[in-house]
Length: 355
Image 1 (cartoon, helix red, strand yellow):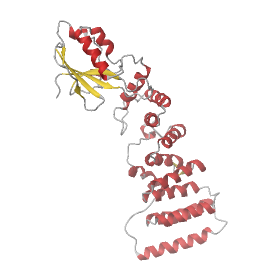
Image 2: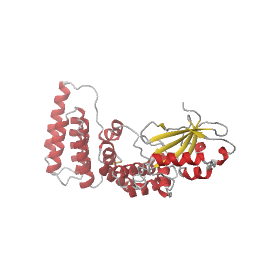
Image 3: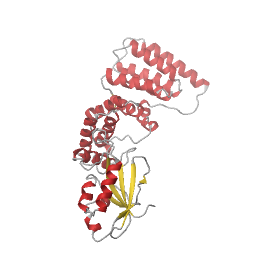
Image 4: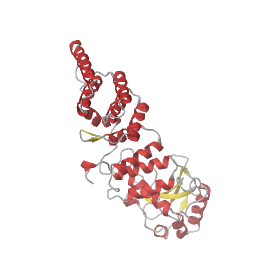
């Protein structure tokens, strides 16, 4: 991927404003003197008189209004700026730069910590005005950037992500957008769309290497969901007690083949307590028979509670090489399939005593 053309949402809201600040060219330098403020007022008065002339070209009109607006922004006169620009847009509905004036209005609201109002203006620009390129910047793209940052509504965010993907594919990281879009579909319970979008994420050439802020190990997360969805899911048990009884019975009767069938068929791991369960080295390809042969395997009477109520361990001992293994049981979290969601699976093995 061409990094110069990619767009990442890994920055803070404050950093996201940088492009807009540069676009508007706001000067927030030292406190202005009384004389300079007086001069600003005189300049604004002259410009407003000139704006009343009907012969002014659109470009000259833009320059004059921009001069007035940026001075108000520089002086942090946000309320005055908002009144001035919104009144101008209302009185001049055909001005081709109205989208830009509303963008400055939205920026003023952000500076006033009024993000919901800013969101209204960003959406108004996208929904009611054709895109406008100012100083090489697409206003629609800039609005979508900010909407993604400030919106807390998943349905709205889904719309914004889809617009970025469809309208600005060369300006963004498509891979990251698919992951973020899929997560939003998850939040709204649209699992068919979520799984399709996770598939599109996995099909991208940089899916396995991309780093996405706020979504650690994005590739394994998506890979596990898709693999689990495509699997028969026939190793799960209705309750933790049923899973525990089945595993203990197979050990007592020396049935390694049964144990192999009880293991999760998606990302089953065998690692030490210090290893990452998602590491390639931890993925299991062996049969339990290889480690039970000639050994007397025993297990604890009771399960060891896990870090949450959805996890538990069964301590076993007598295995080849390292004698103590903890079987890791967990509740299945897969709302896409109500029949499977909430069942229990044997997801992995931690080798050695607990640290």
